[in-house]
Length: 365
Image 1 (cartoon, rainbow, N blue to C red):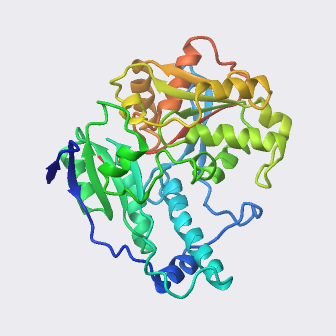
Image 2 (cartoon, helix red, strand yellow):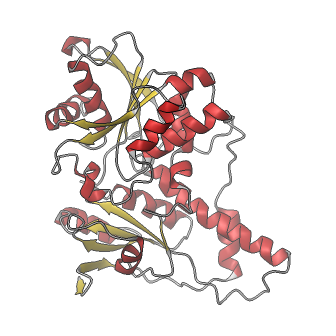
């Protein structure tokens, strides 16, 4: 481990040739599959399963659970496999653009002056994204992503990260909110892209687009999700409002039904919650604020109960204990379920409504 004046620890850096060549461009362009959202019968992603959880013996009615921990759909057992794939596709699209520029005479045959784009991402203490992106980027021969994790991550997780196809930098994420420039500097990526904060890669649109339509098409009244840095809520609200105005080909329910759906995002009430990856210390960039949801409600593009809700620690722990007996989960991954339990006890759940919970899976142990 190497410490320096940036108050970071360089846990691991992987040697990689950062000079572009046409063989690399061809491998990225042709080797990473292309799918179209206009062909819902040929999905980019195998849908994750949905199962019914009967909680009537506990006094909580019945809910549907979308299980993103299912490894037949998400290879590493977490919803973060989806943004890892989308990050790989950005490299594919970059390569295809270089070929088009060469065809049109904008680029000559020599591209050695171009620098291979590198990505930085903040993963906090969970390590979920590191695991997902390591598998995906290794498979397609892409440059290892630069992961920033919290210094408080366990020694066991540090050892696991060292084995992965990623660069890893440790900082104290609880001290401050880092700017995009600082994030790039911490990860030795001044000429690269910080996909934690950048709107250029459209994380609020592409990270979970197939996922949200899988969920919408279950025709639920209320959808409960965790609220964190992964942009899950951003994707739900973005696609909900977009499809209310101009339906996506993947949408199989009416616009009216979609517009009435409540997207309820769970944020831990305590700053040092057991669902730590959802706490503010690990969420330096929120693209869509709560006010965005308020505006969408004013326009009738989302349900009247859509919002970010503080969830009590007792419910986060209760949800975990219940859910872990049915599927692989974590305190953070089951936080949407925790919010459902809390609202039920508060008398805010109509038993006649169809409630849908997203379990986002389990990270490194």
